[in-house]
Length: 81
Image (cartoon, rainbow, N blue to C red):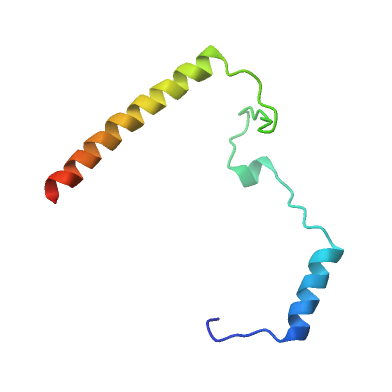
């Protein structure tokens, strides 16, 4: 594929195909890797609602774990230099 070059007409055909038909991907639970019976909750990133206490605790726990692991990895890396 490294040496393949499209002609101008092929490029124009591809661009016109992109404009004429909007690409819509169908999302199914199988494509997301969701197990049967598992609940999926939609989240609106444009207008997020208040973060609950449980979610905040989970975020803090993840943040602390990341900070601890990052600090240890950085320390080990700097010791090798």
